[in-house]
Image 1 (cartoon, rainbow, N blue to C red):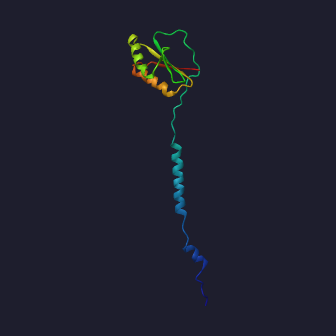
Image 2 (spheres, rainbow, N blue to C red):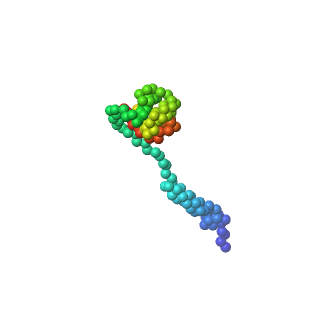
Image 3 (cartoon, rainbow, N blue to C red):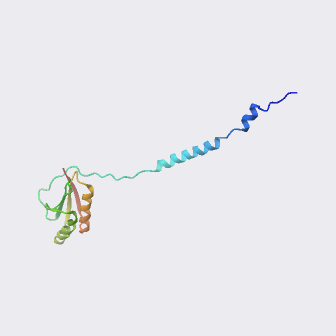
Length: 137
């Protein structure tokens, strides 16, 4: 009579194994999901192209206001230095004289965008929406 061993290798390996196939299927499905959703995620940005060349007007037009913003943060209103908060009052006064007046904002290439936008906001609060931008070097 043959005696069987209790430590048979065939029966022992099949009874104590962990089946990894469902876990691998799950990980593969997650990988596919994240790859597909990552394709549709796009970052949106705003490209701003400032003018690179400016030609100074030969004669000052009576129907336009010129606002200059320097790189030091100084603001000139018709060749007169003013505070940014005083632009609105000056614009309202000029608009009372001529209703169809426009504004030319000449900014230095190194001028801070915050000062430029503060000046433009004051112009808009003064009631003028015809604004043209230019740069100086």
